[in-house]
Amino acid sequence: MNNRIVQGAIGLTLAALLGAALAGCSSDNNELPSPSVSSSSQAVASSPTASATASASATADSTPTPAVESPGLPLAPGQEVLDAFQDMIASGAAAAELNAQLDADLPKTAPETADELIRELLGYYNDHVQDTLLELQQGDLEQFLELWPFTEDEIPKLQNERIRQAAQEAFDGGYKLETSEGMIFTVVDYGKLKRFNDALSPAMRDYIALLALESDQKPASDAALVISWEETGNRALAAEKFIRDYPDSKEKDDAGRYYLRYMSYLLTGLSNTPIWDDSLQLKADVKTEYEKLAAEQPDTLTGSMVQSFLDIMAETNDRMFKTGPGGETDIPEVKAFWDGMESRILEELGIANPNK
Image 1 (tube, rainbow, N blue to C red):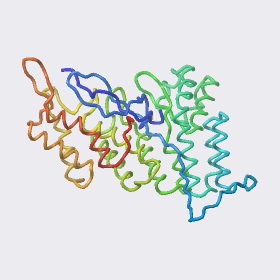
Image 2: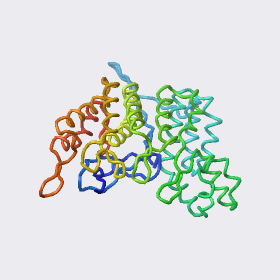
Image 3: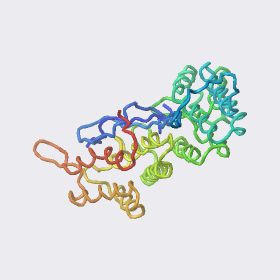
Image 4: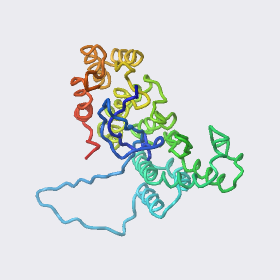
């Protein structure tokens, strides 16, 4: 029988991955899909993005006095560095230039400034990854395919000077090349940002590590998982841990979108990697992984949700859908679980609704 797929697409661009790029073709729809026996749409990977926001607080006594502006006072060194970097982005600097500037500035800044600089770069990647994709696609892509898997070491072997230069600029800008469905495209190589770890706060270091999991090994290609069920669960656990370890992080909601995506992969599958077999029953290998995860991680939301799904499977004798004279239809308990996944995650982890 034909594979079934999750309704809708999961947002979270992986730098356009997770969003998502991160990772290939991405979607702007962040809704958790509801699997349907009649559905053929694809949940796609994307990568989480980071946004830089700042808050200001004011104190007042019983006799407040007007604030006095001092435009002539010099900015703090960290603010000067951040302002200069933002100006570079606004003026259209290339990713390679931005990375070179961070190499020069980041080791000399305080962690809070370093974190903001990284947020600016992540925002740039989210806005500009398609520019690099189009630039590379204008050349003779057969050269890349002949040298695949293509790493930075392969660049000197490219015959066309323009293509060679474009590839080098992509790598210098913090990108890497991926292929899917007959296309070659750029994704952000988040692992390269680990070179700044010593300058960053623990929260930002762990966030970069979370993003690097996906850019080091994309989760899906051609509507199929290309990582194991165990790795899928581990990535969900890593995102949950980040959210719980850093509840006040500016990256919390982005990590939440990452978590939503991997929980969808884990508990609904993809069109070419469904969690059920041709008899509409939960696959044995998937069930084994669920049982292992639930037993080893009972105190996590991930483990708890997997156990809840296993409990439903025990009631349905592992059947995902039912058949009858009218064809295949949803089992109410299974559908209710899928439909309620997103709201349960948002409530228990305290993350913002990605669809609002």
